[in-house]
Image 1 (cartoon, rainbow, N blue to C red):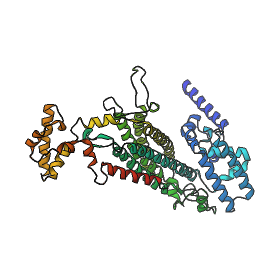
Image 2 (cartoon, rainbow, N blue to C red):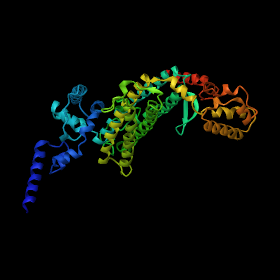
Image 3 (cartoon, one colour):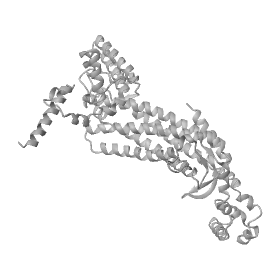
Image 4 (spheres, rainbow, N blue to C red):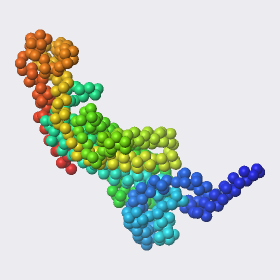
Length: 481
């Protein structure tokens, strides 16, 4: 053996020996060798799945309660285990538990702590279940809580939008298509568009609860168990509405997480669109709004700068949420039934998405509540463009001119204005008469942005009456339990 090879093998033996002295695996009876420490570290999930500590203990409490009720464990053992688990739960809530990579995941860490506390009887907790159904149960419990929190935060942001919209029903701003000024609209109408986007997000998350609120506990590793357990009882104890009907499906399903990531991606897309608008509106070129200092930062070199960093960050974080969705779809696409180690990759993206979505909603609510709307700048912008050109075409169409002919007439008038360096409201009546004898003095009233907005009272339109009706609907919806 070459010298360097000998040193390498000595290193390997030392690593094996170190790992063996470090911990005896709770599952290690079948194995004659221990993994090297770095291999253990690579395969361990405890650095991130400790996030599930409370859910893991809650699931174990329900499981051991059922074991006792079904006569699988004696009452004395059950009470001893429950006492140990309750003490661990209290410590978990206080952040006092210390986790070890040596015990791989949250389940084995908790089991080891329990055994250390109450002795070998703690090992009976795992009767009639597997880490496969245990981790699935933990994630169902975790997402159920977090989706409830997200639903509340969506409602909070909707309330902030409604509060701003109520103050700005008659605030006029340019409406855009292709980021070109198109027609004047109510600023409240613009804000309420995001209210209804968020309402669809609320519906999607709410509907997903039906699939989240389903118990896999008791499915075992993949085939159920020979113990006479009562899966419906543990589902009841944990507040689940139903159980998985197939044990293979129960331990291998991650649809509920994929659906959560998909719903989160849709929500973040909506937030990113609004973030882009706030960024534009707060720029020197628009000056439509000013964001509160709490949601902006300065420059290290340019003292005049006020950057909309929080809006930009949310816009950027949208991509990472999309990435988590695609990552889990990719993980799951080729997996045979039932559980596979690949599925350990379901957690970090889920945890990060929860953190990102909750943080983004909280920040956005604050930005909307505190932003200063510069109504004068918005309205002035509607008088310095050609967004009222449609009013001219509608004016002629209402007098019997085919709309396509009216469109051409107005297009020539706009071109004339551009050549002369004026706007439509600046043209004298004789120029209008020359374009069409149907134009009368009332054309100037029709051209006024406020008139243009207020006349659009078709259902869902930007007319002031319709916006007030939409606000009433929104507030009624928010007041419904």
